[in-house]
Amino acid sequence: MLKKLKLMLLLLVVLLACALGWWIVDDNPADLSLVLLGFPLGILPAGLWLLIFLLAGVIAGILVCLPSHVVAKQSLRRQDKVIRQLKIDQEMQAGQDKLDGKPE
Image (cartoon, rainbow, N blue to C red; front, top):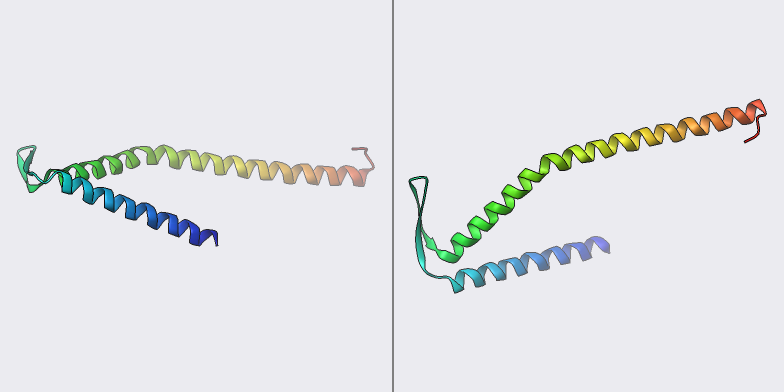
């Protein structure tokens, strides 16, 4: 049930993004020819150029943040492993103390 709701929400977000993109391109129909580092990029509507560079910025932001996210996730997994091992050691020590007759 929750997976279907998540899928429907994702589909709604994608449809809204497509509608917004169509609206931006429709409101900015002027043809532009951009030149990047001396190379002509072609003639496209201004709204489409806006969406292309917005998407490029989002992708660049994700790629810049990705390494720190991966490092943090690995550190968290290592800490979880240490905590699990400490809990196992603590349980084993408590069991050993019971066998030896020591109070808790």
